Length: 328
Image (cartoon, rainbow, N blue to C red; front, side, top):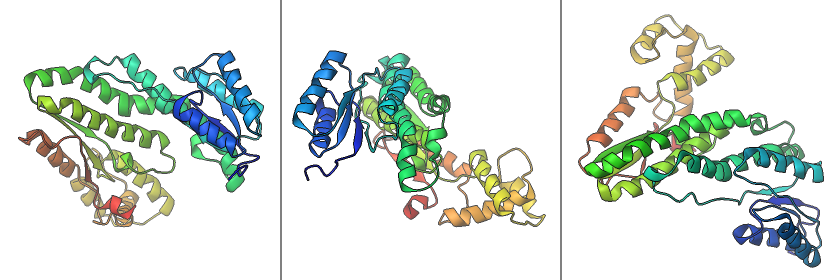
């Protein structure tokens, strides 16, 4: 296996200690050039570069960055591109902080710092280096690279940070009362990926992780926390997707389908004719049950979880997806 990665370049974050350093060492031993980064001084980083250079055949660089600051992560990516203008071959996102604190006493600053290091920094680096990687394999550019950090942060703020803040606010009283029910609306995309939806998938996966941790912290106090994971639902978010497909496919519709929309679609307006046929076609293509999930069905599940007398149903993602995940 020696030198099997000769000519390849890797960036390993958190590579000045622990798992990250172990990964960097293995890659270097296989002939890979490695960019080292971690929370150490420049002198300590350069000492590791010297150590690797004496043992392994590749080229080695240390580039420091504080992963708590997104602007430094952005600069790290550009500094590495300065060293390797053609991009890198391997990116290992290993840097992390534990973020250990009970939910009710965790500050928003602590929460945001943990997200910055463990989630936003990997996104920024993937966005930075993915174009050159994908151009080596297939024509075209990945949508991730064109997503702004602002868009990423906005999605996390609404889909993940806002639920955290609200849980932190109300969990203490639930614990003192000895009873509480928390339901987070996640998504089937909490568990699977989807093209063009990096921020959404990451935020919903994070919300599922928050659900499980909240369940553990509340279990001894009679507080249950679960997640409902719907797929395409008869609601505006799914309909916006269907609208785009309707425009793309140009499926003709009979006028009577408008009445179907008035009875079944909770969007507060009359859906355009071409949207309704696509509603049926989209469901048939994507859901084994052949129709969209109704809002009332999700509401019933929320009602069950809130009214259920046992706190032992907790920490679970409950899928109401019309069999969608069975297709994945």
